[in-house]
Image 1: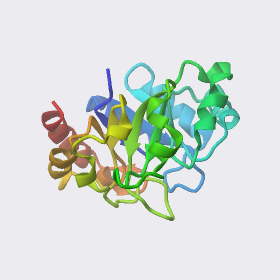
Image 2: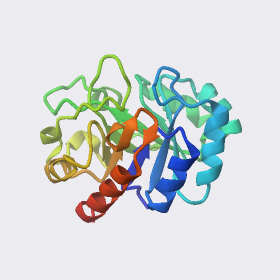
Image 3: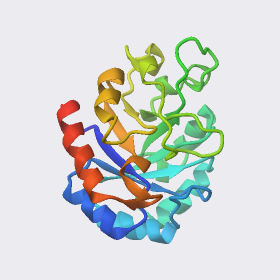
Image 4: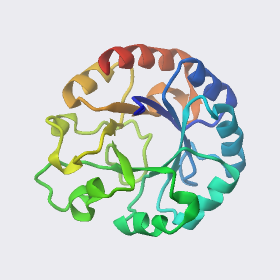
Length: 223
């Protein structure tokens, strides 16, 4: 089943447990050292164990080599690897020959600037047609930070669904919060949502009330 509700940037066991109790579809663990929501491999393994068999576990990596991802997986089991940097299509080709990555699902985060940008990474690298890719994540552009910035993406550029996305479902990210979630989903019509800062009191510290609000809204709007 495709995960419609993904909460990202978990750092604390109690927040993972709260998300599981709310029956979210996926949680994200950020292994990018420069992220304010970064977790060590050891902490990631602790959080992953709590979620095992209960929710999809997504590891977020930025410009990490396939070998680096494998080293993380040796200690911290994951269900999905989310590539959130400038990884090229060669990354997927390299992953094909690595046993530890052959079964895991791979998602790619992109910044969608519209069909009028022929050099957009979806066009240039053909991500959407690659058999190893199972999902796209559309995030807002920020020159300094990868995800969790609170900035919103251009929702109006996503409806109708861009042809460049091909067969792939996509999660909408970027500045989503309870206050704008209905407008975002109604405008962009994504297959699912991904939220970090919109459910927090500070980076990596989740707010249960806001998580509850998002779940109630999203389940109705994405039904």
